[in-house]
Amino acid sequence: MNTPRHHRPVEPPLIDGVFVKKLKVIPDERGRLMELLRSDDQCFRGFCYSYLTTAYPGVVKAWHMHHHQWDHMAVVHGMARIALFDDREGSRTRGIINEFHAGIHNPVLVGIPPRVYHGFKATGTEEALVINFPTQLFDPDHPDEYRLAPDDPSIPFDWSIRQG
Image (cartoon, rainbow, N blue to C red; front, top):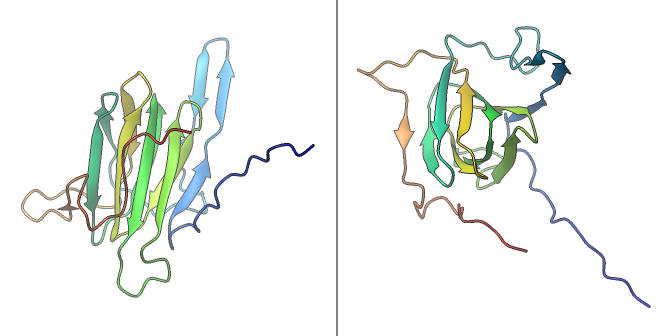
């Protein structure tokens, strides 16, 4: 008798320059501690400030990219689907999409290099809290930020839930 086999889909390669750091949660009777980014991490690219952004369940905050800035994103509450798209001329991973289900059930820090489009969608039933450590200060007079709509046809990605 043949039993059905369950196969995971083949994951695309990581986009050139992207890194994922598994975060260690240290719980005790008082609560928990989780380091996000350290200057002695192999993936450390520096940062000049940090900020918190949130999204309510089902909300998509995408797409944007920076020409010069690295982002280092970690979901510290709730869950989010972080998606990246490499549209860089000359990149060997051009056209590749990476996605990560990050948050309380999968604590990771995702490093996103310049010129890679990225965004996230809050998943689950709670607001997603995302901390970012950019490598450049935001300059409102000359922002290093370029945006596309979440459903822009130039990025072949569907934010809807995939059933099955």
